[in-house]
Each structure stands twice: as C-alpha cells, then as structure tokens.
Image 1 (cartoon, rainbow, N blue to C red):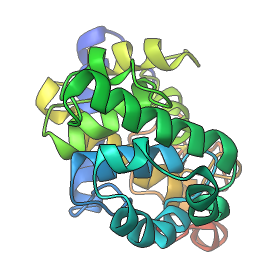
Image 2: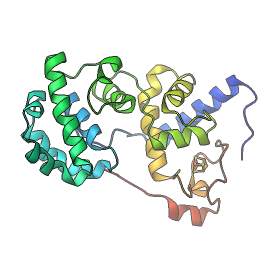
Image 3: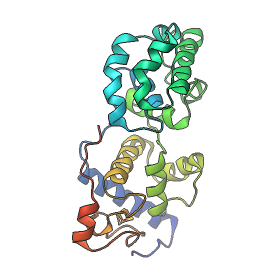
Image 4: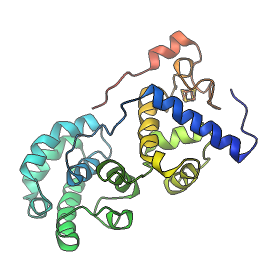
Length: 235
Ligand code: SF4
C-alpha cells in the first residue's frame, strides 16, 4: 500500500499520474453506449439506468429508427414504446421519462437537446450524471460522470471520502484540469468494470498497484487476481 500524500500538491500529482497510467492502459476509451446524435445519447443514457450498456445497445437501433426526433417521443404510443424498451427494465418509468423528455424538448427547447447542464437537469429522467454524459460525449463540453464505478474508484484512490455524487464531482474536479474531466470519467468507469470491481478488485493484476493507496483491498496474488479481470468490451 502506498503512503498517503502529505499535501494537496502531492495528492494532485499522484492523481494525475494515475490518470496518465489509465490513459496508457485504455487508449481508446469512449462511452459504451451507441449513438449518433445528442438526442440518441440522452435517450440511451436514460435507458441505461439499472441495466447494462450492452442491453441498451440491443434495443436502440429499433428505437432510434422508430423515434428519430424529440417530437416522435412526445407523440409516442405508450404501449408500443414500452414494448420496444421492455428488456431494459423499469420500462413504465423509462417510457414516462422518454415521452416527457420529448414533450419538454419540444415545448422549451425547440425540439433540440440543450448543451447546458442547468437546462439538461430540468428534463424528465435527467440527473447530473446523465447531463454530464451528454455534455462530455455529444457536445465536447467537459463533464465528470459520477456513477457507481467512478465513486468507488475515486474513494479507493483517496480523491474523496464522500459518497455524495455532487461532492465527489466537485472534489475530483478540483484535482484535474477541466479538459481532462470527460476522458477521466471514461477511464475510471472502464477500470472499474474491468479490474477494480466493487467486490474483490484484481489488485495483483492491476497496472495501478504501485500508485493506489487501496492496493491490497483485493487479492494481490497475480494468478488469483488475473482470473478476476474482466476483459470487456461491455458494449
Ligand atoms: S484493483 Fe486494487 S490496486 Fe487497482 S485500483 Fe483497484 S484497489 Fe487499487
């Protein structure tokens, strides 16, 4: 286990080294949801709640072809929409969000997805996490996406002690330049999915072993740890 940094500057230095290591490890990180437009990413992200990106990617080709614009969701037949998205789970609530989303986009934003956090979070089914995914990946505006993987890894790295997504976003954001936020989010999520699992992280097979203050939280034996690694892809 590495020593705790003695100063904020040391914490920042180590955090940025971890980010550089992750960049080498995952040179082609991206959102694992398939999309072509901001609306498609917004819809896919809403559907990804409580399910896997892989499952969402199975339904979105049909969904996006049937509902290409916000107005199409606003006017959707609920039964038909629910049928298409059933396999993503919670389909009543998700259908409500998508129909409400289409109506709100048409009523307040001319049918377009607004490129601002404070507007995005007013839309049905859209919280800060979803808003930051859309800003970072569809508009190129830096955003930190705090999902369960991001929060867990940020705590393991000693970047925050909080479990509150808004506090995590602020505390981690203060350690990195804004331009790094979107890719950093992808890298932590990818590492969390593949190596640094919630239960039994693969410490003995982790490229961050020499930098991570939580090394030893999972098995350190390389052979045992290697079996815990999930290679992906997850889409
Ligand atoms: S797998 Fe272990 S060493 Fe690697 S980041 Fe997670 S806790 Fe740290």
